[in-house]
Amino acid sequence: MGDIATVTEAEALFRSMAAYSGTYSIKGNHVVHHIDISWNETWTGTDQARDYKFDGKRLSLMIGPSPNPRTRQNSVRTFVWEKIK
Image (cartoon, rainbow, N blue to C red; front, top):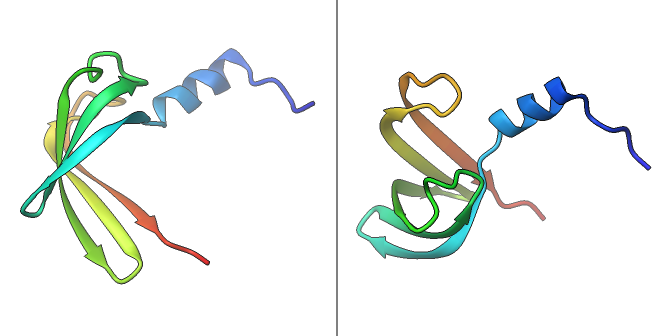
């Protein structure tokens, strides 16, 4: 069995993650995620639009200026995934 996180560690982990599931559609250089379930219940049942681009094996999703869920300050965030062997 692994170690059990402290309350502080668990809170830090929760605040550092984002997770949702659902379908998506593509419109130009935008992907729209149609959220069925989410770690943030206010997103469940909504559409979340992101700009996207491919660069070789990398996919980047850019979220325009919006409140950062951790700091509450407006920011632009980019999520990057890279395909590996």
